[in-house]
Amino acid sequence: MDAAGFDPAASITFFPSAHHSPLPLHTPTRKHPVHIPARPVTSVRTNAQNYVTFVVNPDADWSPRSAADVVLDIELGACTYYVDWPEGHCQVVDAGETHGRYLRADRDRTARNDLLDLPRSA
Image (cartoon, rainbow, N blue to C red; front, top):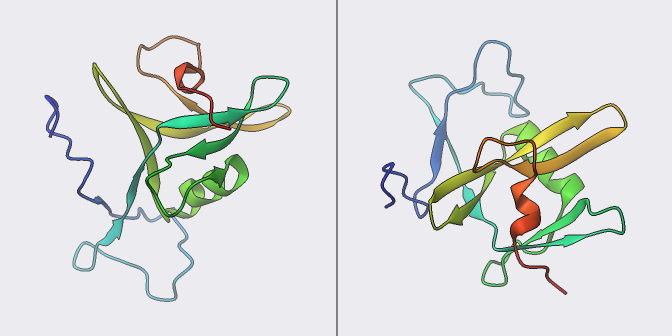
């Protein structure tokens, strides 16, 4: 558990809002929360334009996972992704852009994509 009280080993509980449209036929409520797995990211693969194309964790059976699949996982509420930095936990998010969507992490509240600070994976 980090200083902020986040336990990466625990799953995240998600309570869909009225605007969320989940895939299951049974819409979860506060009486029936959905437990979303939290997946740690330890490295990335990038393309020639330096966009993240895959998130990687060599110790995880889901890895590597394409950026497109991660965006879909986040949109559907299937799971979340995070990076553990020395200064704390940082969520990986799906960021919209005029020419498409991409993955980013913001540990220092700057415009820079901190996912690009992770080691590159082969």
